[in-house]
Length: 386
Image (cartoon, rainbow, N blue to C red; front, side, top):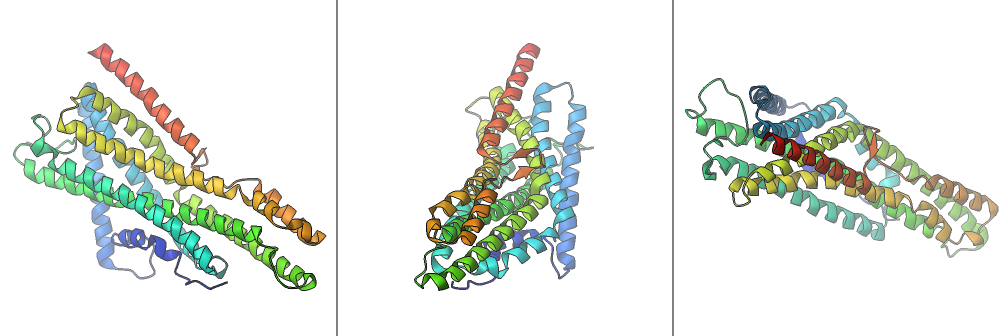
């Protein structure tokens, strides 16, 4: 084995770590007053924007169109704040996650294993960048929306209640809300990409583990000597598997509740976005804006479900990898060890959101179906009121 750098796995989410450190949201051994102040500012700003939208829900409670539009953004903001609060309450677990990722058992990789890891990292990095581009486009379009839309009612990017005349301070409020959208998109996208990268690292490691199990018998020495080598390799594979299970247990514990809130909010947000698109002209700027917003919110849950499903699929192949090794050439002791690994590998590693449902493509379809069901109900209510 060629020993890779201890920081090789940590570097994969270095960008997300650096972004979260700007507001002191990521745990750090060194305390920076400036980062803490920036974090407090972001939190206060985001909560103020949220309560401003909540006030509109009470003021416009009899207007279904306005109510659905406000609830759309209110649910997005609420999900973001809940995810951030959950991460802040448990972010010390990142120390444990980093400790596992820097352990020699996971970083002692050969050149071919590093290639496997790099391929996974490249894929998730590109998808993460695509998601960030969608977030940036959303922020940019919402900031410009009040000035390019012909509807005089849309004076601000977001619905909000203010105790003064909006027309008098329109430019100031547009700038303030755009900053709020930017803060939410910046932190929220980071909190989505970080767990996605961590899950992808586990999928890559399972691929490496399966390859080690397939080739565990391939030695050139005499059988009396190679039997000891095979036994040592199997013990390393068992330790490797235990580390991966412990690693994913920490990841799930840190992000599970936040993902649950995000999925619950996404059902409503996708539904309400579709409902809003139904009410407006396809030629309007608002329709284009909602299309971008819809794509961003859909991409958000697709990231979790796709990579959660990938992890489940990769963890299911341990039994097959053991069977594909030359087990018929080894002694009974090694066969017993392989059998135990095969039995343990029959149960796939499935990530859950709040211990309620799994992060799989089946769950993604359930979310989309639920969104459509609520959309149909809203459409029917609107038709009756109309």
